[in-house]
Length: 222
Image 1 (cartoon, rainbow, N blue to C red):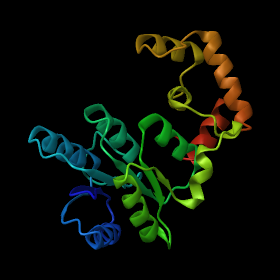
Image 2: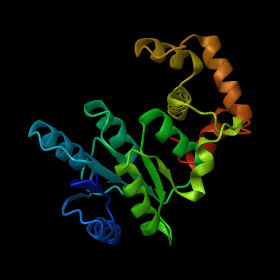
Image 3: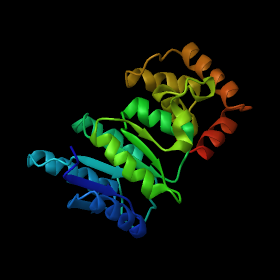
């Protein structure tokens, strides 16, 4: 059954128009736009409270900062927050980014239903994704289908992301261990954190923590 109420979250007018065109070609008329993740979250929450929920959210991952202060600054943060109020809400990511690690994380950790790459074939792939998700099927653009293949260089999970974020803030292994304990993140022992950090050094061919953080930031993993 095709969707009836859709939220587009993107801060580019041209992309919004393109997505709107795809949705209208599928005879979807109840379409709402949002250029800020905070605003999108409030719209979804309000719709849930009014018992008129969205059937689908299509969101970018990157949003440019402006004068407005935002609690949610990325599509990934929006997705993580939305999953707390509706674990079953269909979500399609429509992004320029084609990093396999990022796709894998979004699919495995946040149960994203589709990942579509913005390129010259983006609109066609987005239409295929919408149709697939409406039939309870998963869709990935051809460029990122390898994200779900079981390869060692893609083995990065939410725990790794939390560890990398702490390293990016300049925290020592001791400080990270204490932070993990306070936030009930396991394993939190110093030895476990050291082993995982060493694994990440090898995985990303990093010489030290600073180099590791630089690599994963370039890959847009944190």
